[in-house]
Length: 400
Image (cartoon, rainbow, N blue to C red; front, side):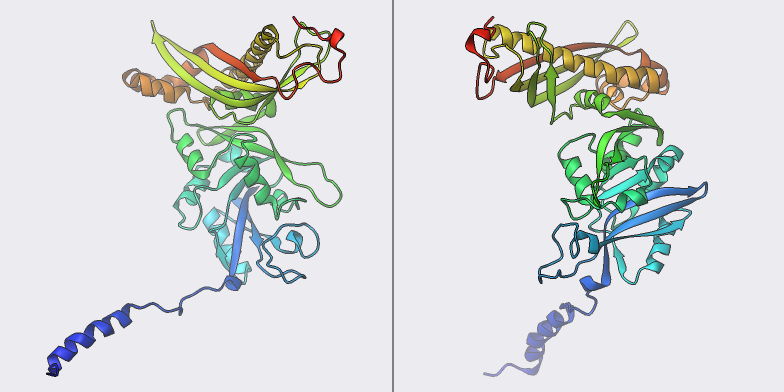
């Protein structure tokens, strides 16, 4: 029995409905129509104008017929596959629209990994810049943020010898924890946190070698109420990393008093730092509790590092070095800058919410007076592949 006409319509109608909702490629965007942004820099042109510079990656084939995604700074490599474009405006959005007018391709921000802010912009205030980046649908909140002494535009133009472009260099340095690691999201959270402070990695241009050079992290820029107060050097930054429980790569070199000469270097294996707040008789106190485990990687002394007494002495030297590093950082942050970038306010707020609610408006006067004590434990786990100093006659090795 054949199906009736209404029955046929019922069978055919779903097919038409499916075809109606099928998508085609009418609105596709070819990669050749896109300007792929891998990094951006913000400079201050004058009091009312900023300059937005972008590093554009050009996907194209090389002379060997390979894809243009690889590195290399020579001809046909990264040098010919990236370019920097700039535009001025009263805001980032204004500069971005003018930048689009200069480019024959549609600007695509989905690959942007790095934002570089010039120190003049940082000193003037960055809240509106961060708001734009967080609000824009294409800009990535996981992008890393840096502050530079040199113009951000000039930093973007650097041609590193090992990577495709500068943004890859900075991204790798951030991933390696070579300094403070901060994303756009982290920065927004810090500026809206209880202490209203933030820290960003401070970068500098490497000395030029032939035609290629790069940038590296040399310290930390310190912010308060979204404006840069100043920066601290790499040595003090290490103490900040200890205090923030962010230390991952570290080699500590000590000079043992028991040795005739030479030094011992220890490589960090694991570390953990905890902030323990306490309010007692109206006095705000903080105990820094830290634990570190290290290996001996260099012994330039006459000491036998496998000797338990020597190990105990090295652990004490390691403990002293870490404490000195923390005290140096605290001295600058509490006394010189009055900027709590190490999380004291967050720790007090979490443990004493009622007391914090009453005292948060006075934090600028409380923070410099917080009494800090240290509880540091250091352990030397392994002496390395050899126990006695390599190349030293046995009769010259100090066993005890």
